[in-house]
Amino acid sequence: MKKKWTLLIMLMILISISSLAIADETEENNEEEDEYQEETDGENETQGFDIDNETEELDIDNVTIKEIEIMNNSLGAEIRLLQLEKAIIKNLLKGEMAVEVLTGLDYNTTGLEEILSEMKNLLDDVKAINTSSNDSVQLFVEFKIKAVNLTKQFRETIRELLDGEKLKEIRERIREMISEDLENCSKMIRNKIKQFNRNQLYKLYGIIGEANSSFVNEYLNGNISVAELKLQISKTINQMNKERKYEIFSEIKEGNIKKKIHAKVSFEGMKNKGKGNNNGHDNGKGNGK
Amino acid sequence: MNKKIISITFLLIIVVSIAIVYSYYNSTDTSEKQFDSSIETIDDNVVTEEIDNTFLEEDEEIEIGEMI
Image (cartoon, each protein chain N blue to C red):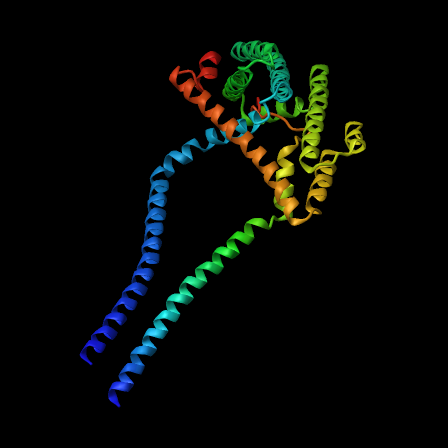
């Protein structure tokens, strides 16, 4: 009888221990997760100050990374370089008009003119980039940073010369700008983007497995906007069965993720290289002064 | 009589323990299944978002800041 008792008690203990062990395991996992969460929270808190200080720079970096995503082919590179060209032309025109107004008011504009002259050289450099060359992305990032820094310098210099009221007045005067260069640049960009979107559309049609050439032509002729184009493609995919939709979505997502990773890696590479050569964001500032 | 009652009690405890362990494993299995099925369901908005990322806006510009 005693043996039976012992066996029963042993069995009970075994079952209790196994259930306790299972419960403990899940608790340990939860504790580990909590600890990890606390650690990461702590790290974020200690770095909070630096994060605040670097937000502006990070914003510029994130936008630039997004911009270079499409520069893996010459058409994408052409679009981004033309857009940079347009941004510089726009600021050059505004700067020249501001200098003209200031000269009329007998202000010393030597500093501003020097910045504008550097901006003109920068514009020539941007125009001279070969879009098919391997270093076009690197040059784009480098020249964009230079353009941002020169613009900032001009803004700071003019703010030292004029008070808020006069700045507002000049801002109003140069708001309406008409320039042939700017118009031509805008037209070229629009055409290139149309070509780019057409290529993207054919790529999507390749994934979906059906093509609608008349729809593409409608877009190229300007009868359909990009928004309508996107809507139509989304509708086509969303109307498919669950499995097909999943397949297509995965392929599109994969392509987009690959582009993002490639852009981020090449940007970080450029940044590190720039830091190594002591040539990063200070590059534009150094040249600008 | 006492012995019988004690044996039945122990048996009951064992059965309950087994039931608890079984239900524990069973419940984790179902949650995994639910997770798997959620992966396969794609929201229409997520597809639209990916399509948006594929195309460029024609009036898109590069920001280098304001001169004044």
